[in-house]
Image (cartoon, rainbow, N blue to C red; front, side, top):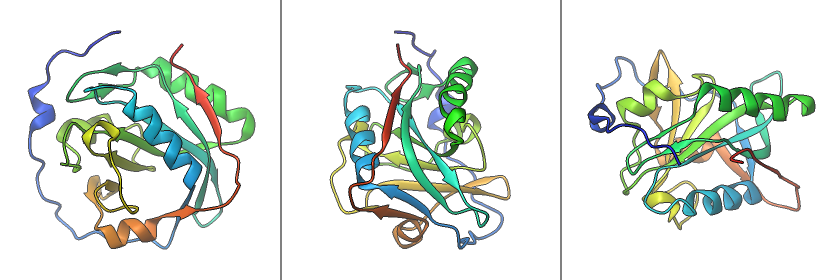
Length: 186
């Protein structure tokens, strides 16, 4: 396992946004099975931050439906994680035959603090996706999205959404929908 050097910047507070958040009409539909699988993956990293990605389809109105949970090869530490560019390429190669695009990145934090750090802002894989932070290294239990941090980038700033905005922006989809699991850590 590779580890990142200690990064004090990852613990810095971020500046406040210059403009208020404006919630778009778009919704990301996430099957409950995708959330359960994501939490299961994050919990396996004991006392280490970890990440996975939600891939799926977008419609013409920027709504999305998660079809796959993808876990890339990554470097993990107690206070951050890193996805090398070759891992991003591997995720694209594994999902592009299905026409899937990245809809969200999901990662864990060591405590109940779920706001993005400056490190999280700088290392987000794209500003066009949502970023979800799960507290306590994935040991989260609750009613979606209470206690998680759902972030959306607008005007070059990652906003942490209120629980109400997060529940409107990412909606759980119950039912027997099949979610593909792609593990690229090998």
